[in-house]
Length: 312
Image (cartoon, rainbow, N blue to C red):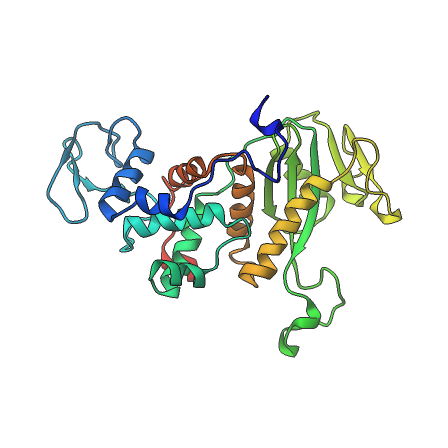
């Protein structure tokens, strides 16, 4: 019997990792550095700049490799989100563990306390780790559920100077559109400029193959889609045979639990990274913890986020 068919609570079949084992895997920076090297270069270390395999190990405190062809120095941090970071490899590895196992996210204050770094550094680190989760799913084959939601604080809870005084519900919130593929159980989601017909259909065209079966609610923007079935939420209908949006709505529920329970605020400027974080963690939930950590480490390659760009 396949492991994902066995009965048990949640993702019981996944192999987790105890804190004792985590500390045994990463007793010091040197061991953690070797782990990152193995994730980035599984077979042989190659030059980040020219791709050459003619690499020499040199005595340098931060750049231990030198390319014999282009003559440039580099390290496993070069060309990743860890570039220019003074935080040790062990702290980065532990942060990855906290990110992959924290299903509702990990606040910068927790990272600050657990890793012994400043809250400012923890906040910067968290945003760089989110870049490892950037959407790389490509197009789904369907059948798929499509839905939209709104992220932001409630108008009634805002300070008087921040209220828009333009109504309730979605007022002052940012629209996010998502699609969940039933065959793979994967999710893609993105901050949207609006929920108009053109915007939503463009998102569907990018993330779903032509002719795939689509399920949604009865939002007018979805009317006229091919192979489309809608459930009429407006009249209290939530399931119509195979047609429902329960899967993608459960993803929204988890994202909002992270918003209210962990982060308390996701500014529109950084919202896409938070959405990528929750979608990436959802898409890796069936993997063992070790595999999830390896996926994040590999996803850090060829990514860069400078602090001045983050706050600018």
